[in-house]
Length: 365
Image 1: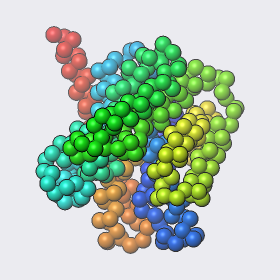
Image 2: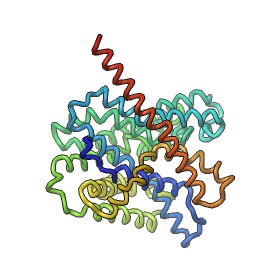
Image 3: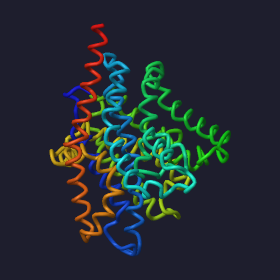
Image 4: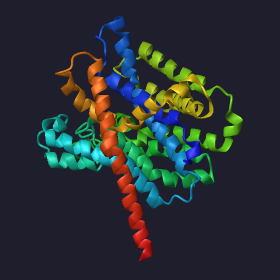
């Protein structure tokens, strides 16, 4: 994405999403608050993970869809540089710490095998391994699959926009076919069930990524005609309506665990809610875009990956020494900001420089 098309609010909204995930994992009130509805409401903040997926589809499309000058090598180097160093570091430290990395795994499985599944991202295809190591890191498996499939998807979409719909539909059908073929008898729960496939793998979650792709294509092709359509209000209203409706009507821990609500989340919420909200943040100057585009919020959003990866392991430890709900959150935020500046961003720059140097050397030969 060219610098003139950089939208700070799209980075800032990552901060909102990361704190929604945090509150969902560590509610700051007792379970019976507001008759239990407060806890039910924040449990639905799980959909912030879907927001990350929609945002990924949007940003990858904006940056690479019409950029033939950015070759596949540069594309994949940038994807690795952005995600992998911090993920590898936090995952490795988690396994060094020990037992917590194996909490969801049978004692018969050797730790080095679980570690290998984690650092290669394949743990996201195994029900018995998906929450091992850095538990929130499961969502990086569908992210990485999207990154690898996006270049081919763009080729197909340029031939016909209908592929924006056909590709996620094909992924869904392929997911069902794989579960039917191997589910239940491959080791460690590989594609164990339809419910696992839908909630945790790219096959079931592709619609959320391609909602972002569709919104990006609308912006690229029609941004001048789309101004003044109040997309921020429309998208925000759909998101809030989903959260309230799911809180009042669901019968399980989280609405997305039910097939009907999951279908709504992958379609209506992803496109008409989150997608239009993101479109509004790009096209409209509102109080929300100004808030999310504030330097402090952007700074927090830039560290969202690190925060997301460390909060589940760090917060329980901090809570032993710092009482209250706010203290652990603030400390985790400070640690994430520090790691982002000290490790995550320098590693990103180093890998890109190293890859660029290799390319120059190869050309000289």
